[in-house]
Image (cartoon, rainbow, N blue to C red; front, side, top):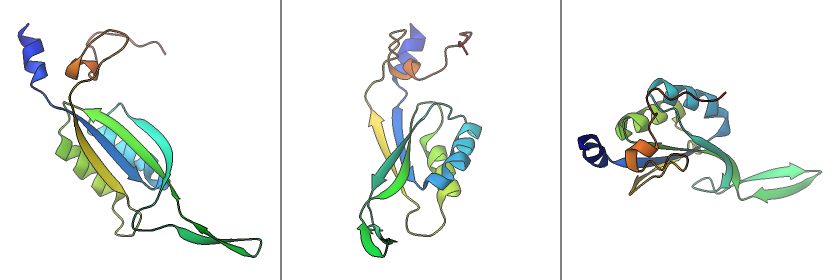
Length: 133
């Protein structure tokens, strides 16, 4: 029972990284190296300080307001949040507009649907459990 009480004291944090799609492989590898293994990657479109760009198609100029990006989402409780932020910044920073943004949110709970585990246990590996390939 002490393990459950101790684990509830750990903070569960969601980290969303929005950046250039060309940096995805490098980012995933760097996050894996620091122990971040579970993540969700989405193709997204958005605008920030870039405010889009202009393209010419068949002689006609078009303003593209939404720029294609990727969003990498991960939830951590054992890997320090600051380490994830530093790692992502090292990989993604070019000094150019469009490097992206990182959003950090504290979560109140998580649930692993298959087992019913809640809190930090819902996002951690279960020792001795074998995955089906």
